[in-house]
Length: 222
Image (cartoon, rainbow, N blue to C red):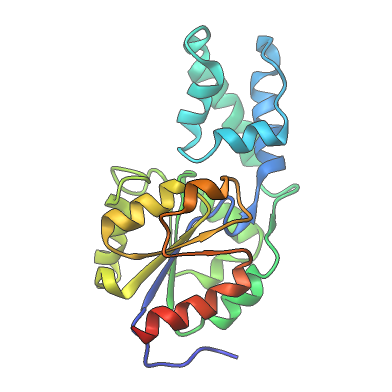
């Protein structure tokens, strides 16, 4: 069933990794490939999840630390070369994502990821999810990235939408901070990459994407 108009909320902004898709294994494999020649400890999926969220450049910086900072460019390039060829080897949409997107036909929908735009678009295309979104933006689509409100504010301008007509859905405190600073409603997902303790400032926390439509009903009723 497609939700019908009239609605207060007109735009839903989604985070990508940890929200729409579980990309943790492919990210871990790419990182381990990138660092393999340099004697760094192999990463587990749990460790990778603790590092992601601020974009790949910052991820590599955190991984290398000060002692190996001079390797940043070569490790970053190794990561991007490998990851671009293995974007969706193991990455899958979270349960309920595709069904929920099917139900949100009357809403405009966008992705704002801290993954680079070309990788975000290709991943969603590979998973046959790109058709659901009006816009897919990454860390390099606008001058700043989450937790800055700039990408959210720029998206609002792009779709001619007021802050009170939009909601952002994400698994990270970066998503919630960006949304709150931009004045949009916020929904956190508890199943993603970040501990739920970091998400307490969201308007709602949901345990499955299938619960999103009920929260939208609440926003639309106000």
